[in-house]
Length: 278
Length: 278
Image (cartoon, rainbow over all chains, first blue to last red; front, top):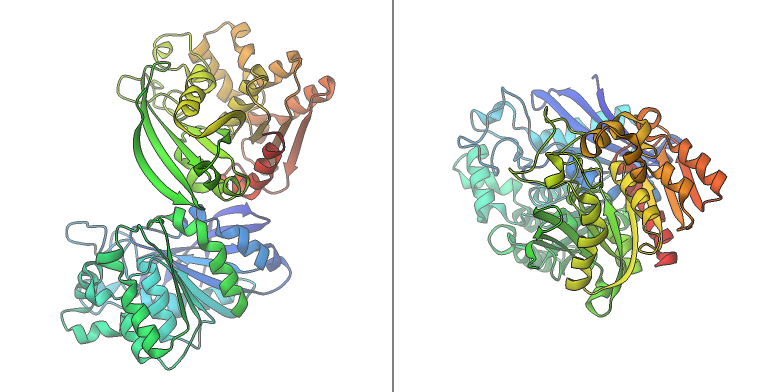
């Protein structure tokens, strides 16, 4: 597998790099970003995977969250994939909407044409990308996963489905119950089809009902997030966690919204949380 | 003077807000951003003015530098103006180049038509904006000034010309000697005309030769900055500071470039530096 380095910036003594590569899983060229903390120059470091939200790329978390400062202190690499396949051959929302298609892969394996050709983001994130990272960079197989909004849904659902692969899970403003909100219903209908039974395996709330594992989980949610009531529904996750005695800490942060300003305010807590398990 | 609030985000317990207002100085609508740290809810706080570089707006430093974290800790407000007048009536570079006209006001008062109608960024930053800020927000008259690249030139030249108005000066990757580099020569020629005598009053190196004051100054420069040799020329400033025994600390930071990743890595040092004097 060939990686093409497309950018390189020194940040907090470590290196942020972007790479292009051909993905067999999503069947097109993909870009990801990796932040290697200073410790990676002399030893293998654990990895936090960050899944971004609707409309984002690998760049948002690296430019706006301030994550490198704490990653450099704690010696954790950060890997950020794109949020969907890209390119002229990749099908998009029929009206170019922001919440489906390009920039909105929802971290599922699409079964419906024409999306099933490229939209295999679940397999890309869970299997191909970590394999690539662990082959090419000085990292251990200690992994944790985090994300924002659609990427919070991705982090929680992927973490719950793969407890052996991740030491800890966190999320900011996650879509907690996609089968019961407009963003999730549109995406799952388009990628997975109309049989709602097929949706359950990607719904964090449903997955938590079934899991036997207990990977530690931290969620932060802003109380003034304009998507809170209609799209995010954290209470459904809180309720199931309580029933299941799942180790979830969900913090409602007063006055914060859905933006990266919110994320930047609490990203340090998330990295220190993950560092306890990595 | 009416301020129109256009955005509001909670960040690190304080509030980032953007405002539009009519500026009499630059004769058009201007936008600025202000970060009010948590302390501003109960007391007047000092202000650090941040001047951005070519192509930037008020948003770059607020989104990419991580400045709010330290401003919140130290109780300092951050004010970021735009980098030029904007709007359909505002003259731009004849070829739409990034280094002159819109997004490239260079913090001077233009004397040459058609730019003299709006490009009065020096007066805007030194007089109108602080007056507005001190009238509308819970801030003291303690001010410091910082900036990046073109904005580093702005911060140093404005600070040296107004030692009574600023407690401390800092810059990242400043254009230190604009009269002797392509960016500065193009801008000064266009805004100030062909008489190079008129350029001297905006050149940081020339101003430092003449100043009687000694406002403390911190400059960080990346050693791998692609603009270092041709455009930035920090050695000219170092040489004059040495001759004049000016209190300049200029740090060459190994391996860093011209980006906000560099700024984010050292912004904490700059805020702690300013806090000593504010």
